[in-house]
Image 1: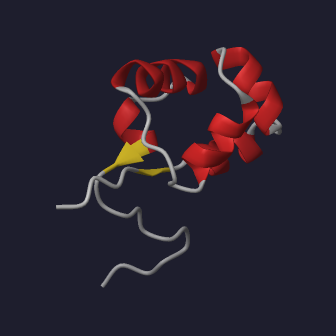
Image 2: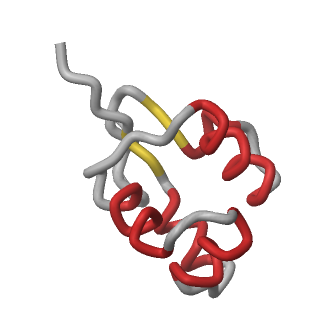
Length: 77
């Protein structure tokens, strides 16, 4: 079983007009960590996932999922 964690970090970060470095500084992590998370190359610890959720002020399940998120604008059948 694959342990891929899908996320919407890039979308939220871009929406708020933040650079990876700005987000990383706010979270106290290295800016490359944000890139790894956004590309799905790294799954966050529960603690980091909760901190990201708090930073963006949304529930954790809005940002993270074990299944792919539907594409924005995708039609539902």
